[in-house]
Amino acid sequence: MSAKQKKVIVTCAVTGSIHTPSMSPYLPVSAAEIEEAAVGAAEAGASIVHLHAREPGTGRPSQDPALFMEFLPNIRRRSNVVINLTTGGAPNMQVVERLQPALKLKPEVASLNMGSMNFGLYPMLNRFKEFKHDWELPYLQGSDDRVFKNTFKDIQYILESCADNHTRFEIECYDIGHLYTAAHFLDRGVVKTPLFIQSVFGLLGGIGAHPEDVLQMKRTADRLFGEDFYWSVLGAGSNQFRVAAMSAAMGGNVRVGIEDSLWDGPGQLARSNADQVKRAVSLLNALSLEVATPDEARQMLQLKGGDKVNF
Image (cartoon, rainbow, N blue to C red; front, side):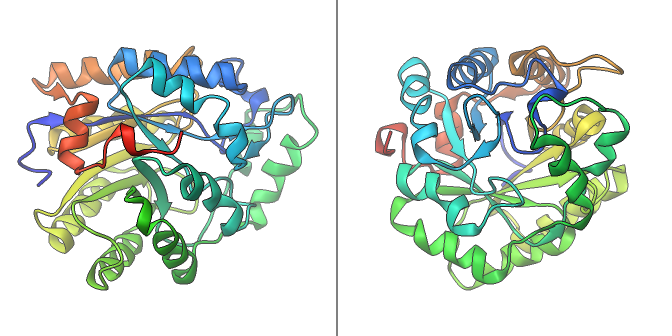
């Protein structure tokens, strides 16, 4: 299916759990900032916005549905963009906690990680030395001994808990084996086609971002899923637009945003999610490709519609 698609789905990951607030003054933290960043990304051309929440004041990642409700209704009121909520949360959260926003708020799309992995963020300490909040430094330091737990039982628990919500999962695959895990749940009928496969490149603990890595992910997904999936890519850090260009050239979709990269060129912090979306749109236009509108993305992914969410 991805090889034949006419439009490219652009996802913008607005604010996530990887980066801490001290790393960039442009990272959206408050509900108002997340709202403006999401709407701005949509106005810049994003088909989908992927959202996390943060505790007010400290900026600590949170999966409290009440915090999501401080910005979700306003985004929905102001924009037709498809909203994608995380079930990843942060690597130090338990799966029951991570599930709550998708379970209770019933979004059109939710992310779902396909395997446990080492999740090494500590190399960021080579670049960042000063932190505003007391949780940030130990959060990064502790990542050399942290496993992001996503067992088969965890994955099934999330899928089955949200089955009646008719949420489409953005299936996040950080390595080749994660594609086989997705195929396993597809064979069991726990997930339904068309799959929305988000391949993640360049995070320590997962697959690299070499062109051969990208090609291997795509070839494996094609072999496992045939015409029954849409393939998208996420390149971490400086890999963001190199990997996006490779995906677009191969008929795939792209994800950008400050969650995935704080940077907008060597030594230059990205000032907004909208700027990253604009760059992605320019890249796609240069390749004679068109960006899918939110409603076109809904049709492609067979989503339930923005009027069937619980916010």
